[in-house]
Image (tube, rainbow, N blue to C red; front, top):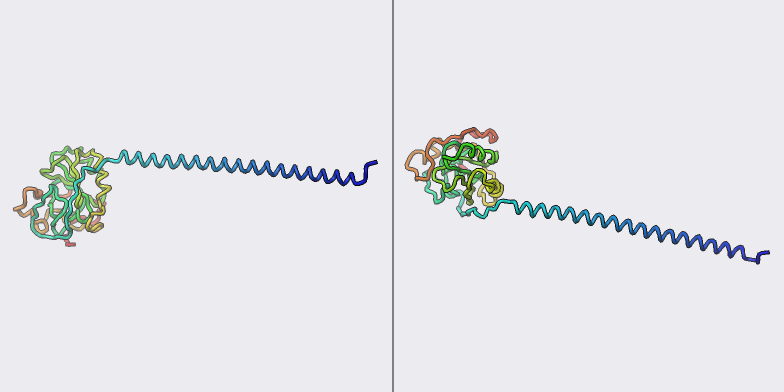
Length: 250
């Protein structure tokens, strides 16, 4: 016959064993959860490191492949000086200074354009790409392809120091050819850039450079560097509405 109270001791022992097993299972589950969480965080950290590394590599690689604009020459000119007479400019092509009250319509020209009107367009944020008149037609076509649809001028220019010269107000770079990778970088940085005196002002509804009443250098007596008469757009810049000349001052 079992001693009195032995049943209750066995019951209590069984309960303790059951509690111990439950506690052990909880500890094991907590350990598993901790390992799983660490694994998740570890994977996330590795993913973040890979993404950050890839972005950093892309940035460094992009900078390494970005054409240098160290050859850009900078100039300082006061804006807003309007004159109705021919102007002798120090730079060739000019990068700023006195200019005609009427700006040159932005677009592509197949003959030289009046300096005084083109400089006014520079004041409004246009980039002026000029090339030697004997530049091959295929090269000129490449320049047309690079040129933005707005706030851009393209024209031949006598006597420039390199095959292609890109100019904005206060900035200019001499380029070796139409394929020079610095051209696009120059346009991206300086067209409508921080040095623009009147960013966003009109580059249409001005003149096409053929009217002597708004382009005095066409009337004769112009400096040697001034473009010859008879400039006209080779194509009407359809992407720039209102390109027909309608002179007005700003």
